[in-house]
Amino acid sequence: MFKQDEQFAHELDQQDELKHFKNEFYINDNHIYMDGNSLGLMSKRAEQSLHNVTEAWKNYAIGGWMSGDHPWFYLSEDLGKRIAPLVGGKPEEVIVTGSTTTNLHQLVSSFYQPEEGRTKILADELNFPSDIYALQSQLKLHGYDPDEHLVRVKSRDGRTIEEDDIIAAMTDDVALVILPTVLYRSGQLLNIEKLTKAAHERGIPIGFDGCHSVGVIPHNFHNAGVDFAYWCHYKYVNSGPGGVAGLFVHEKHFGKTPGLTGWFGSDKEKQFDMEHTFTPAEDAGAYQIGTPHVLSVAPLIGSLELFEEAGIENIREKSLHKTGYLMYLVEEFLGDYGFTIGNPKEDERRGGHVCLEHDEAASICKALKDYDVTPDFRSPNVIRLAPVAFYVTYHDVYRTVQILKEIMENKIYKKYKNERDVIA
Ligand SMILES: Cc1ncc(COP(=O)(O)O)c(C=O)c1O
Ligand SMILES: Nc1c(O)cccc1C(=O)C[C@H](N)C(=O)O
Image (cartoon, rainbow, N blue to C red; front, top):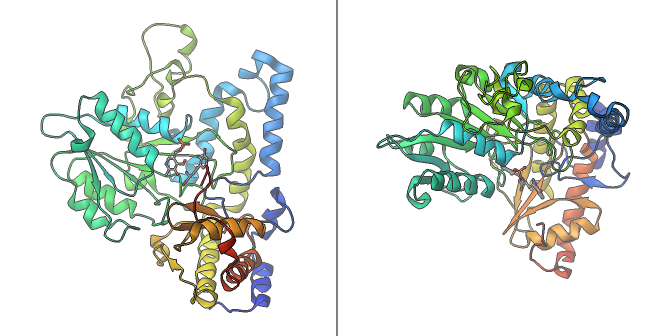
């Protein structure tokens, strides 16, 4: 269904009904940005909404909490409602707050309730380090040895985790399951419905890290019955470095007091009563802790407009097609150069990036940067390439593969050290 020639790439671009979105983003003409899976590009809408919030601060000062187009007091809830369609949550099940890691701490503090004989947390050995560190420290806070109580499902191939292996590890001593939706390195998409059903059949609550899927894949957290989820917005949702994260708590858990409490988790009508008895919000808002980071959330106001205009189903369709095209070109043009495609190839098992493995991955990434292509390296041998639907064209994908071919054919990568820089 794909063709090898450059003209074909141009034809695909002409037919791309999302192509006009590229003009919404800041990117130099000749630059190819394949790293939206780590930090999304700045959009003009995000820049504008950030500016609007600084203007509100200028004009209203403390009045900004209740005045202006986006009163800050309700902003986290308002944005949660707008994120809800991206994660398949009800509007009141989603709140924009914290960071991925702090939200995980909050949710584990709330949902990990060990009891006699059921004390373990189940994760996987390919999980993102920050999640593992959080789980280890939570276990320690409960007086458990993480080496014994944090179970990490093994990968059979070093890239992916078999759902059946995860389910087999959901034994009677497991009190909580934490998994990624999409694995950060290989890009494997786990079957969220299947895993949630299996966990619940065994009486175990389950939560998902959606960092690598929110903004690129539609979700179904509510209908799947997922207990909770957490994710960042600075990758595929383009909210800027350190942008405020999000979390989902299924409505079946409403009414419980979160493990970590703070005044911004209060019922909004009660918050300024300043009582020493905490009255939690009745929805996911209860999981907030302190004052929202208004300046770090501001870009999301504008960025979300693009998702509302494009539709997440269309974004997923285009992302699958572009990653499919990239894999096709890799196989056609790079077959002789020692690359392995490390992500699952089936559409229902892969996320928004292609994982290329190569022994010289670090030096190849450095060479790509000198050709004005931004890839993403994960030690020891992974090149992640994300042809983001909004701003990477088919022709960009074509050019990236041609540049890779040139780097390999002419051994240009040999000019660079095959080791990572400070930030990968
Ligand atoms: C899967 C995953 N989990 C957690 C994190 C940590 O997020 P943060 O540093 O925003 O807490 C990241 C990215 O940094 C990630 O990719
Ligand atoms: N959060 C990051 C940062 O502060 C600096 C550099 C990279 C990141 C990332 O988000 C990395 C990303 N989570 C990953 O999947 O590797």
